[in-house]
Amino acid sequence: MKVEIITIGDEILIGQIVDTNSAWISKELNKAGFEVERITSIHDDEKQITETIIQSLSRVDVVLITGGIGPTNDDITKNTLCKLFHSTLVFDEYTFKQIENLLADRPLALNELTKTQAMVPDKATIITNTVGTAPITWFDVDKNKVVVSMPGVPFEMKKVMSEEIIPRLKKKYKPNSIIHKTVLVSGYPESALAIKIAEWENNLPRIIKLAYLPQFGIVKLRLSAVVDCDYNYNTIVNEIDIEIDKLKILLGNSIVSDEDISLEALIGEILASKLKTLSIAESCTGGDISKRITSISGSSRYFKGSVVAYDNSVKTNILDVNIEDLQTEGAVSETVVRQMAEGVRKLLKTDYAIATSGIAGPMGGTDDKPVGTIWIAVCSESECIAKKFHFKYERNLNIERTTQTALLMLLEVINQN
Image 1: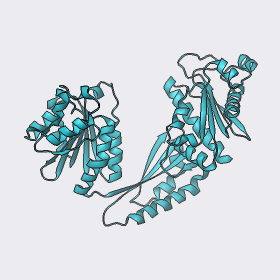
Image 2: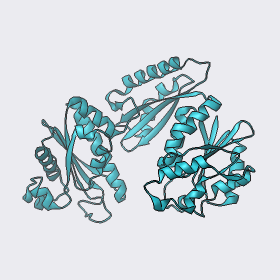
Image 3: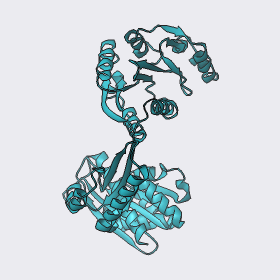
Image 4: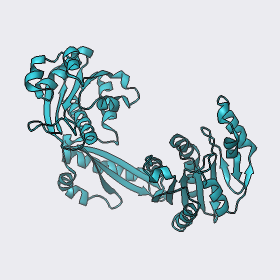
């Protein structure tokens, strides 16, 4: 079954906010066996909304809309849907009670505008929004097509999609199953990896499709198959597993994981299983590595803490970096970054430590150390490795690449110990 997603809101089109809703919806629909045909972002404009929905219904079975259903005058989606589907707004007592309960401790929020949220289209199925005031409307169109209007607030949309919309769609359409298995490969640029595995790829069973999903320092290989009701699901899963085993023989240690997992989550799993701990000393990354590590629930089991040693005085006073080395070699140097890593490891008494020091830019570069010059060190109880990199990109990208590289270096050291 095919789906189109429409996001409504001027704030998206002027770049004030990023449309994360569509990416999340697409991912969840794909897991459920639905194919997203198109994603469209449009203004809060009645003509645009109407024309876009009509065009979408001519192509697909399901149209999912987010945004434009708040209590203010610029939210016109509900009224537009009423006109399009010849519906009338009626007061729904149950919806109003839900809104009252939700805003019980926020009396100022329960006003004439929020009460209008209880006005709902009489020809729609109303789905309760348990975490917001705007109810969800489900229109059955031409017997076998559906238009659903949801809030644009991400956490409200995610909850109703997970608990209500996807289950209802699966019951109505009974979609095929889609199998995805992902292998994470490091040490190869995308093109070099494609050459390396060309023969393996050319001999994949016809039912299995391969996609390359490159990130900095990592290429994800996603093997996918669509399973119809007449084909044995477990048989295809077994076929994919056989192909992944062949790939492991071909690529060896370049495969860092055979599941779709972030580096920080993978590192966390390994550290937790080995009962090992981590600390971080960050200069040019300014806490970005620590943010990645602590984004994983349960990271307190293995992550002790970090020092953002941006100023040299922090490097010397807290991390015990030799002041003479700072003066002679500079903060962006192998000697200093090694001392930072060893310093934080000893300070916080951890098994592993990462340290970064570099020139993220756009200012601060010199002829000897231009913008993008980065030193990264990773230390364990038995070794300390340090590497120099030249990224040469804008500031945010330099920080992002330094963080990703540091995590890859840490993973390599952990796996060797």
